[in-house]
Figure 1 (cartoon, rainbow, N blue to C red):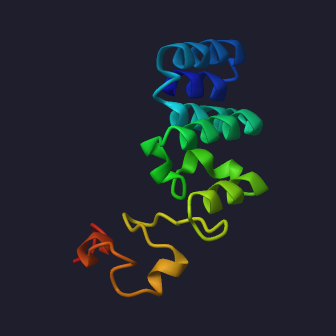
Figure 2 (figure 1 turned 180 degrees about the horizontal axis):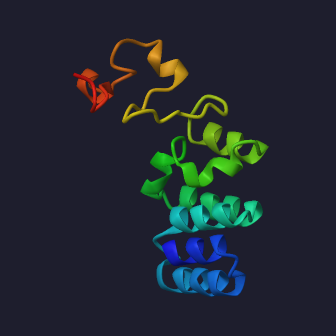
Length: 129
């Protein structure tokens, strides 16, 4: 996964494609979500959504990170992202901000001091006294 993304970032598209093809051949049945991440990183939105759907169909545990996954950031503005969130039972296209080890969204922060089920101490910054 990392090789495919790194090679793409370095502009080595053929090496990136080769690493992605190897990833799919070796782990395609179990790593649908991670493959979607790679496609999203590469800017191949159609393929990313295809693999997210595969992950959804297979109940891929990686989908639990969909609202905080920075590797999927460039999919957020696409209507298919909101549709996937809705299909998964999330409201709208709300994106969870990750800030200093806090996993609170705007909506969750209104639900109480713990940010909607996250222990209060988990929201404390590490450098706080």
